[in-house]
Image (cartoon, rainbow, N blue to C red):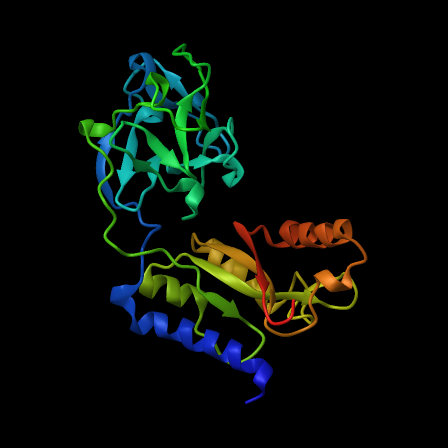
Length: 284
């Protein structure tokens, strides 16, 4: 076996082992629930999806409690909080103060992992769910902010409880490399294990500052693109891994940081990943 392939062979083994290791694999994307109902907060108002609109990116707000589906939240054992078939989400996974809270397709990222603290706060990305202002007026947008446990950061979950502890299983995004060997079908792994996200590897230079899968396969029309389409069609998501242990790295082949950023954006536009990952290995 060639040395440069040894790490990738291990990735094949890891992926293939997922099916055999079913009891250990996380199903962090499943909507297993502890309770469903209203979440109340500042001024006795309810956490509400604006306009009962289930489109991704819809703002989450405070509103007079009215019993509609826009205010019916399912608190999951996986840390998710769901309404209208979507997850409570911190926009762009941005932990900056003032980042809006919205609903988005459930994808298992940290932007959708919420924990309830003993002080009544709901936390994600190290910040607290916060009623802007503070104001309890109908339509007040919700955001994340530094935690100080003020009245506008305290929430009562369905049944008056808090999210239960997780089962100890962790969600995963195993590497999937399509350039060599015969990896199991991604959708078969999804069905067998509950894993819903894969790290597609590796994005390298196809010559100069041109991104290509493994440095040889185009962003679209390749086996990689077909696999990504199948994963998304089955309700999963992908992240793209730039770099790795070997190969012609993209960054050093770009003339400037802005050129590199443009190449990364080209990949994002073509693939639509939930996450981008930069593997800094070897002599990088």
